[in-house]
Amino acid sequence: MPYSTLLQRAYIIGLHTSGEDPATIARRAEVTMSERTVRRWIQRFRMEGFDGLQTRRKPGRMKVTTAQDDERMVALILVTPLIPAVSTVRHHFPALNPGKKTIYRR
Image 1 (spheres, rainbow, N blue to C red):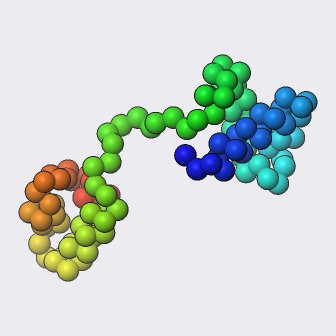
Image 2 (cartoon, rainbow, N blue to C red):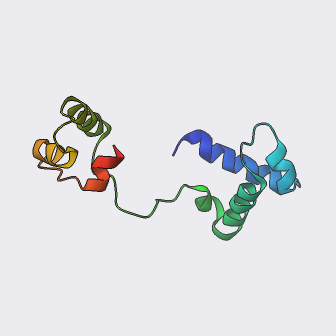
């Protein structure tokens, strides 16, 4: 997680503990969050302490391709537009065995 994200969340908690309400905190220029989001971070801090300010892992399957793989897939499809994209990519990336959704999202 970027340091600035965690720092901003801690800053929100500091403002709140010094007496500012969530609406006032959200209106500050240096806080780029809605009031609802400010309230969520305050609630998580109350429930979990500073550990609650960390970004949680998102549900779902982890990404299996790298940014370089994604670029290569797109380039391959662009140079061979008449051949179906799925079979082309799977032929050139047998170790990854990317699914249709992965290929179409790239």
